[in-house]
Image 1 (cartoon, rainbow, N blue to C red):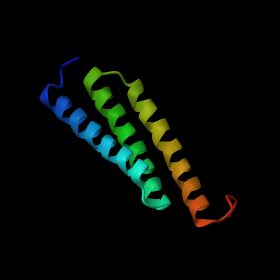
Image 2: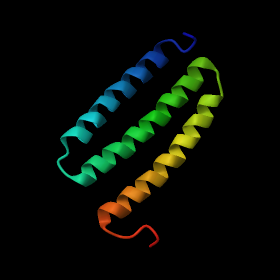
Image 3: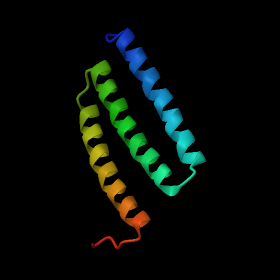
Image 4: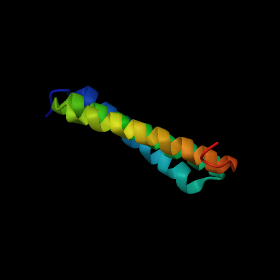
Length: 91
């Protein structure tokens, strides 16, 4: 599993640090849009984790998980943006 070597370790370290910063922003705020953007970025980081895992383990189903997660995250971000804007979902 260590076929990626230093790149894999650096990629995971950057993704973990970025995730920690996003979780801090989600908890700290100060406004709802700040939290919404942090949640969206956290979804993007999960896609990044899946892609690095696919490269690291040579298993292609991680890419399928990443694609599904990206689609769900996109729809969730749109719904959250509409809710924060105060508009109905069918608009």
